[in-house]
Length: 221
Image (cartoon, rainbow, N blue to C red; front, side, top):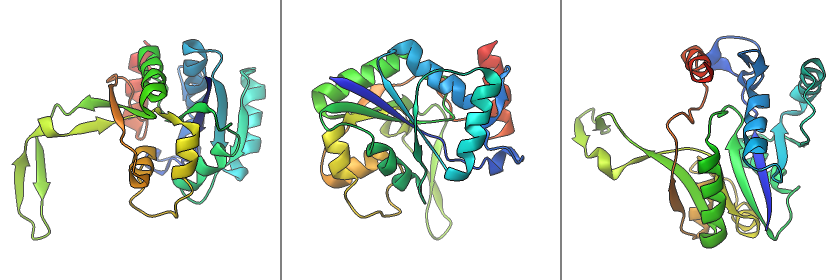
């Protein structure tokens, strides 16, 4: 079955404290987004890569590719008003009878094992997402300000890539957008399809803050 990966890279990087969007920031001499694309190519070079970028960032991305001599093949889709709309635009470039993953552009350290297992499980079940255990204590805060400890073994941290049968994901994305759609799994579950869990890797962090960039450099070292 043909495989696609939609890499969503529409962040403005406001929490990074700079003007350059976080997906374009260099770690160890190479922009984050390039490292993310290479991660999927290393795992399986047959995966077709689609990068979703805001229209006003696309020329800058092409400029970076020229500067860094980055020639790894990929197609570009236009970013939308929200992540939901961005993924929907990326899906327009995907065939119906295929497997399609959706991945955060600022997660360059997902392992090949996790990628492969997500695609394998999605081919069997239709929908698979990587998760990791919660290792810190969790407290639930109520509307009146009270809080209580909740059992952390009842919760998981969700990562990407989230992988689906493309026909299923397209159907799910035909629904009207709501703010409850925080990731692709939530869209598919709202459509009525169960999502299977795959064990993720803890290095698969989403680079959001300056501290995360320092962590990324340590991982690469």
